[in-house]
Image (cartoon, rainbow, N blue to C red):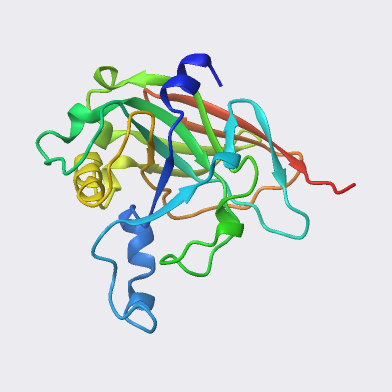
Length: 221
């Protein structure tokens, strides 16, 4: 990870679950049943802990006996303190954007994302650089592509977000202050795939960059 990115995006990593319409639609029937009763009405958040931080071109360990799934996402880096921010002023609090690969083990519950699934060492890859806000004309129209060993495996667009960046910042900052260096991981689309030791995983977001990860088997001494 470059010094610029490390310095500017050194805060808390906030993930947003179910922020793609296709993924939310897949779960609507389940959300009518116990224990949910209804779909979520506010952003469903989780945190990627500091130990999950990882960089461009680095190794991601594949836990023994588990399924490992990459998650392409646009990261929004906060540039100014944000508390109770309005929709109209939300973008002024953005420093820029970064590619994120939000690795996870498969999950059973979207209301309570499991720490053991989300927060393993190296499970949040950011890079390769910070792209300043003014260099992206419309972050709501970016393509996301996930390739494994050079083969396209997943493709979507930020046009399919449930909540765009101003909505996320306004709703989150209503109850929690966001600080410079915090990163909002705006969600991964439907269609997650499994990867195996030896795989090379690439996430590409138009205008933001290409992020590489190398999957390696976890070994125990």
